[in-house]
Each structure stands twice: as C-alpha cells, then as structure tokens.
Amino acid sequence: MLSKNIFTGLVSLSCAWLAVADTIQLKDAATITGTILAEKRDSVVVDVGYTALVIPQGQIVKITRSEKPEAARPSGKPAAAIKPATSPEARIKADIYYLAGKSSPVRAVRDLVAQLGAAVVQVRTPGGLGSGFILDEDGFLITNFHVIEGETQISVEVYQQKDDQIERKSFKQVRIVAINKFADLALLKIDDKDAPKFAFIQLGDSEALAVGERVFAIGSPMGLERTVTEGILSTKTREMEGALYLQTTAQINPGNSGGPLFNMSGDVVGVTNMKMVSGEGLGFAIPVTTVKYFLDHRDAYAYANDNPSNPYRYLPPPGHLKLTNADDVMQ
Image (cartoon, rainbow, N blue to C red; front, top):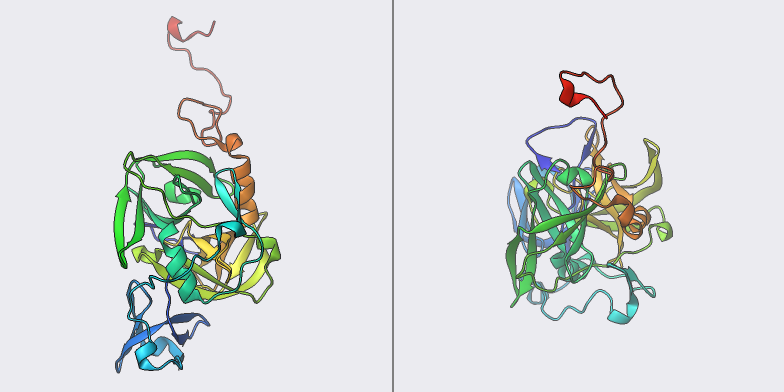
C-alpha cells in the first residue's frame, strides 16, 4: 500500500504492468520489456503498452533489441486482435471466481498484459492506495487487508479498453465482503448501480510452479497505475512469521499491494504484498492456494459492522468493572 508513512524492513505493497518487444536488463536482475522510443545520453524512454517509462542509463546493464523490422513494431496502442489468454472452455467457474482449466499455452508478456490488464485495478482509500484484481464479471475483487485496514471509504479505479483506447473509470460504491488480517487478504465487491460486466482473470495453481519459472506482476507501484514488472520465482516456500510466501525477483514497491502475480499462461499464482527494503529483487506474494481457501471459507471471515463476533472486530479483554452509579450495575 502506498501512503504517507514510510516503513523499513519488510514493506507491504502491490504490483506493476507493461509490455512490448525490446528487452532491458537492469542492475538488480530485473528486466523490462517494451518498445524503445528514445535513447538519450542519460536515459532511455520505453513504451510498455499504455504508458512510457524513463529509465536512467546508470541502471541499465544490457539492451536486447527485437529482431522485428521497424515497420512491424507495435505502435504503442493495445492490439485490438489479441485473442483471450484462455478460451471459456479452458476455465472453470468456482462460486465467485474462475479456475484455470486445461493447461493454457505459454505466451509472451506483451500479449498477456494486453488481455489481462483491464482486470487489474487500483484500490484507493483516504489513507493511501494499493492494487487489486477482479475475480468475476459481477465485480468481486481481491486486495490486501492492509490496503483497506481501518477504512470504509473505498473506491476502485478500473481501466477498460474501448475502441483501442484505455478508459479510466472510478467506482465509489465498494463493499467489504470478507477480511482475514492474518492472511492479509480482503474480498471487496463493486456495487455501483451503473457498473458494467467486468473483465476478470482466473486463478491458477501455485503448487505447480517451479523455482526459476518466469512470472510477472501488474499493479500501481508508487501510484503509477498499469505498471508491469517481470522476474522469476526465487522460491515458493519462503517462511516468514509462520506463513509460506512466494519469493520473486519481479520488482514490487509500495502501491503494488494486492496486485496479481501471474505465470506465463496468464493465471494468477499469487497476491503481491511486501518486499525487503534493504535489498533489491526481494519481493513476496501470498500463494493463490491461500487465496482460494479464503474465498471458499469467506463466510467465516465475513465483514459485518453489526456483528461484534466477526473476524475484524474483537471484544475488549476481561477486566475489573468500574461502577460509578447504579445504572452501571450489571443485573
């Protein structure tokens, strides 16, 4: 989550999104894929699909250019003819979310981002912002608990593709459905009356991941929406405070919190939620296995202001009663 507070050590955050043909390798072992628009003495400007990044020359280790002829290079607009990452037959509806069905083919990050980007959203509260992703056409979405912790005034910004353009729309009627503070997960629902049917993404299998496998993240690091970062899975069993996390070299920064971590088939395998501040390329994500458990048992984590026994609100511990008058005496 991006807020006015600055943390040291482990910092919770979100993810980024991007795409194109030239590959730029950075000093921290991260890579950025896009179309180089300009190469200056002190910086390189890269088109990543729906935005452009300015990368200092001092951070670049190597540039690998596409072998495509210039005439065939992307124009920077999202490809209108890109096919869906998976066909309807390749996914399974499981209550309020979709599961990946039969094995989907591995695809380029550029193609996957063009297809999946509309389902990744920015979650805003008065205290800061984070990321999230939509689970189904009705507007259920996942983000991190710490993104909305202590907040009820929540808005969600959705970026929809329309006539080869990205249309930004903010929805302000957002309901908290369930939360799990200890797993750092929150389930939200967009309830605006004029809400359309939303683009959504499907959940994959984090258990099937292999160490060294390529992954990428989409989110709003430092508030820069629609940012994409790519890396590899460093380990899928990093133990921290009694829980197991996916560790990745994909760059994660404050504002990435709650965003999706994808495999190269376009399936969500994790929810990014923190990084190690004292190092680079040390990002962490909640395995999608944990997300599925949370969704399947969401009734146990239901959020209700009028229920003092729900998971987000705890009764005060027992203590000595201070009686000040007769009205305070318990019958």
